[in-house]
Length: 329
View (cartoon, rainbow, N blue to C red):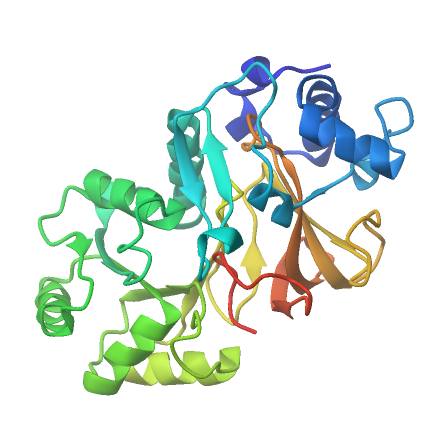
């Protein structure tokens, strides 16, 4: 059995499927022994370290249980927590973060594996709603990106679209490498007022419409944003409050995970079913960086999984509570 303490220094060095499986099975055995909520859930599924021998057999905890339980190993404490979005306190859940440094290390290593060093970028954030919440994991992550970027224009722009437009034009003229990350509805709001031709700009959407606007298909949304910003592709971020890691898409909504994160698919009608060898279904995630909470999660998202490990998000499961950082339906 592998303890989180032994894994924390090597988690970001994982490269092969064998290394991933060994670490995942070790963490499963450790959490079964030390995480009472997860052990109770595993026992209800009839799966224990005695009969789990492959990652496909590891029980994945439904994310909605974060609304009703403090998901932490018994001997672990945490002061920092992130809160899921919701229209009332009854609809929100909390993800307690025992090791904030590990969260930031995961966020930075994820970014670096897809885009390089954050200090090379000016990071502009258009995240109203998230920024107005006190315990947003997305804001916590992007704030760290901004602090690490070392560029004066890196900042949150909230509702100040005019200033954002001016800043983008200035950065374009300087040929400065720039990332604009925005919640989907805010990017669409901006695109209705301003347009430019900035083909080198990375526009990254996340979070969907959140009930602020009519939902659009991915192709409709990306067509609007590509025209407004004058970019050839739209990037996307996929993460959620209950995770420590993120997946990214560089075009067409085709996401890829870092080596310490894996997507599996289960039966869309049965949240307790084990992952199956299929290309469509509900999404389970193994996030080894989430070692001090629960690395094995059953989400409320449905998707398509490709042979090379890349995946697409196709929507939300009908019975799920709509919240978090999932992409649009």
